[in-house]
Amino acid sequence: MMSRRSVLRVAGAAGAAGIGAAAVGAGAVPALAAPAKAGAAFVHPGMLHTQADFDRMAAKVKAGVGLWKEGYAKLAANPRGASTWKPNPLATVIRGADGDNIATLAFDNAAAYQNALRWKVTGDTAHADAARDILNAWSAKMTTLDGSGDRFIAAGLQGYQFANAAEIMRDYDGFDLARFKKMMLNIFYPMSSSFLAKHNGAYDSNYWSSWDLLSVACVLSVGILCDDRAKVDEAVTYFKSGKGMGSIKNAIPYLLPGGLGQLVEVGRDQGHALLSVGLLGTICEMAWNQGIDLYGYDDSRVLKGVEYAAKWNLGHDVPFTSWTWNYGAPGVWSGSQTLTAASESGRGGVRPIWEGLYNHYVNRRGLDAPHVSAMAAKVRPEGGGGDYGTGGGLDHLGFGTLTFTRDKAIVSATTPTPSASTSGTASSSDTSTATATPAADASGGAQPQGGQGEDLAATGAGGIAAAAATGVLAIAGGFIALRRRGTRGSS
Image (cartoon, rainbow, N blue to C red; front, side, top):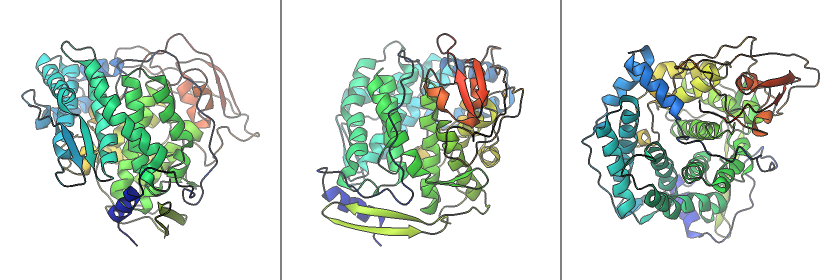
């Protein structure tokens, strides 16, 4: 059995000449059709946070309210969020090879995001100036991203993080958005898009789900930053029906009793499993804020997968269906490994990834997510880049207790937990009906509940609460028929 890095070196040697045809593990499913288009206009800011989110954070922190106060204190204590942070831009960034210097970019990325966030919460322009200067320095100097196969990890992780910081700063005086977009389009997007199409010359199944998901996060965030609908559709289509391990039915191939879905990386090790959990939340939230409901896609399959990972990492037993991983590169070599149990490696690890998932499923949608809820309670208040070490701790922007905490939605009838069915609708014998009322945000207004047009109509029986602010025409047999209520806001 070769190590992961050995697999990557062999795959890299194969070049990008072809795409493997091996099946993506046991339980792979046929491709789905391309997603329906969301509204033509992009929401800005509209990645991990919208203006409504910033307004809520600012009001709650100013009032000294509970979790928001604790979350902001965690942010203020991180040295990367200091307005005195000075950037150290590089022309060439390397990951996984001689001269590895990815940490320099990762820390500057964290500093840009944290300063941008502090500006939005406090109004202190010293933090805005610091974030702007970091982003401008990098877009003025960086020309190349290189290294081993790990360069694709750098493109995905640092790409989506860069884009999120820039999205917050996009209208700030002195920020060169046009030059920053050019950097993203010329360096980060092509690598992530190429990886999803060619998988570095390896079989589509060679790389684990986290590799695909970080690439999807980059493609999606660049599409939003650049108002590029084709790139957003590329990311959403891959999430739903891509060939690799990060496509949602390959990342979570088995649905199990108790509302659980077997996240494949749980069989590998928990560090990568938690990376996948965090990336799933990141992708779903960015899509949600652009009117696309991936949280609820395929009867809330994401919820089942993250509940599974949370349960195992809380110390509970989980069922496990044996699963075979096929790896290698066409014309070079191939092999397989059968996983028969959830891995103990890294079990119980802590990452700042749970608040967004908890607040969406429980507080925004009114669903039951007991294990995600317990993990969120265990980790809060969430920190961010640099608070959890210099390895996986820099994979996530973090600070979810501050940014994602929201008041619980008011639902007039019990909203069912998504069933174990893979269908987007309930069984034909289900004739239940329900109604819901909009949740109030910090300013007293209604929270738009994500999803526009045709996308929201296919979110499954678990999405009843999401219809609240959009307008419910009928809910029967698990199908939600909706009408649009003007231009979508942000939540």
